[in-house]
Length: 145
Length: 313
Image (tube, rainbow over all chains, first blue to last red; front, side, top):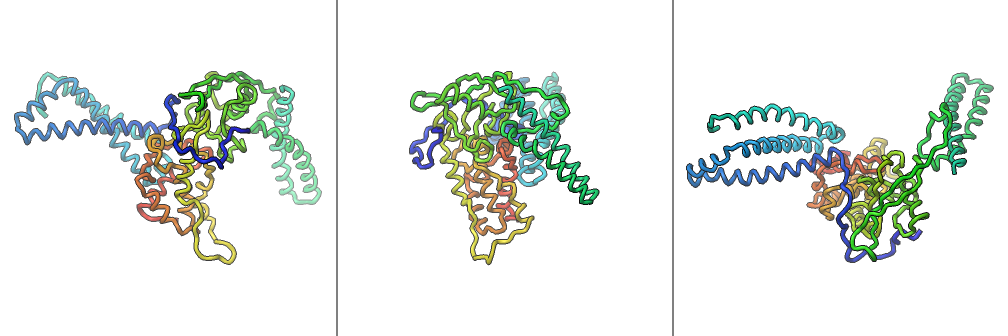
């Protein structure tokens, strides 16, 4: 067989990078929890960026702050807030899971179970939050909270 | 071919009989410790050992013995067509890798490596892939099969849904050289960097003693065959080739937790680097990919803990 590279040959001085077009790697719960963690993390980062800016408007003038916050009070932002809370809940719970996985050997062994517990707790929390929040968003009385 | 297969099946049947017959004979011998009984037991186990020997030949082909075959009527296994789609790349011809279809006749008990052999030997001799022992020990033939890293020599056809094509491509994250061959040098560089050898001062009179418990502490990580299935399944390694990768950390773990070794702290310092263990995001792809069943992520977690609280042997 001549299909092996001899260990005597010198390594390629300019190695070619792997090219595009392969299959998607089929990871399990661990990989997808990491993907979810990344996406929610980046989403929360962009929220925080905006949040720091709008909150700092209070230093400019209370009127400017009120104007901006009033602009948020529409159904689209209300639905966005559901997404935001879901992202925070998932990121927070999975963060706790990662801490456990890194520090406790039982959790390392049962990380798959822990992932589904995270998903389960997130679903329960969102089942509690979403109706309450949406009633608030779509109720005709506009009140500040 | 079908005769040959039938013979295999026959001997498999005998093997099943030998498996059920042997322990009983030995148990009899133990229960009634008379010489005559022991002798008859010996002879009976002797006769049943014979077909077991011929079954060993069959074991070459059939990786999994089927004791149930003893009871059921023996049936010759049927070969069936399997489509294997290989991601080919010839640096002298192709600008980009391309997927090429091959149809091969396979038996359920054969491996993906056999399919690659059949392609190379019967259809397209230009197909390039690495393999040496072909029995899951040398670690040459790690590749991505249906989107997961495995050893081609340990992936059985029967474990795949053969109504769909089987996709075979090179492992990800290392420079592609040709077809299924990647440049393993960056992988071995990381391995060398963590000093994968025993470092101990002083000359013992005979040998360096170690208790069973001390040996057990790092037993799991001694199993590594450096196939790179774990490192090239790691999303962090794909995007950051500087990351040491699971395999290097596994081999560091093997010496960090060895009671005889004195350079644990050196290795911990090497891995307490920006590109060291803290890059691990616990995706567990490495643990799932390891063909030796090493709990890779657990080993990495133990190295992380050793950095924070010291090495607990």
